[in-house]
Length: 473
Image (tube, rainbow, N blue to C red; front, side, top):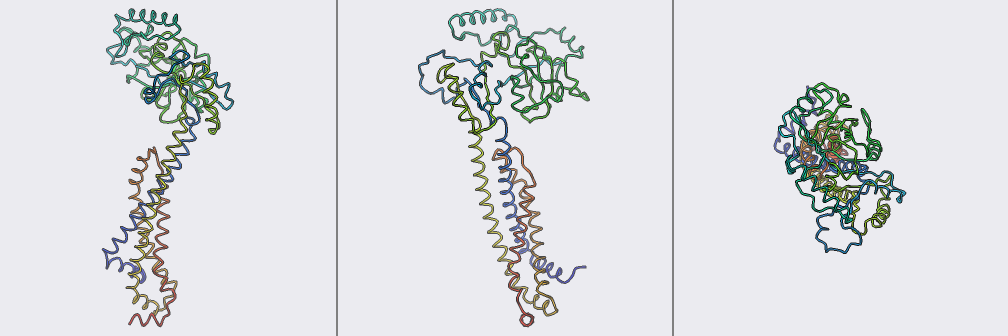
């Protein structure tokens, strides 16, 4: 059964439902805005810290691929060959930069797989049909020889040429592969991944959950070796099969059989669904064919990001001496990431300031409304004090009202902040967020609401019983 103070508060909300509803709505909107703004600032700080600690932003990327805007610049006279070709041998530039901790190659790659439902086991779309393979290969070899004799690179390679070692398989061989338990015929037609050198795994702190990683000797081997990301291994494994059972098996692809030697521990979404294969410098075969159309990227990782600029200067001098000026592009992904972090932080602080200002205005208005409600309670306060209520009892009466208002408003505000925070986080490019920041914002805003709700009650803390009795008459 409700006590008399509780009955008074209940009647105040019941007798004026519109006023009470507007109070709760104002508090909910203010708390929702404040909580979402605080959540954005905290999620931005957490995301920025995680991004800047990533190995991707502690390295320099060396490439010969020109940016689109650079292609519009006037032609410059070159003192060396026009087309620089980077290989893993150029990683020796790290010896001149003492701050370089890891140096490796990382190129995008893909495998076109042969599935049980495939009906075309020839080359991928855009290449010459099988009957013209020999002619295309001979033409490519002739162009390569001519280019080597002139000291340059070939520009006459036909667009639809078939690499000489491109894998071909007959229907009979497909049937035999399906019956061989050591061969994997997947249900997907293509997977993406990277060609890397062994130091890539060290730079990213990636370990094998099963099997092994590459070694330097694997870069010159003739076999096709492959390491699978954690999610990709689960995708290729049969129902109920342990992904570790894939080790030693061969994946049937149009580029040839790929022997699985390792499965990685979970790293990140971007790598868990990828495969990794040794980078090879051979100019012949399929790797050489792809090397003509795909630029090799060299990556130099440092332990201290503050040394990136000085390291870039040293590397630029080495590559200029090898290939001439303007032949390679040295990119610093961290500089671009820092600009993005600064922009997101600035936007987050601005939104937080605006939401906090709006919440403060809402609190002032709520306090004013409560003040008017308190004035209408003067008679009730006088009766309670005449009956022996102490100042502490009167304070607790208004505290109960403030707590009720703050509790309902905080709960509604937190529910409102969840979709609002998700929208702002997505707009800022932040992948994930924590609901704990919303909860913390709602609790903090609720406490401020209670404090502002107690301000109107201060005028009754010093009233004497005689005045209270006269106000009740």
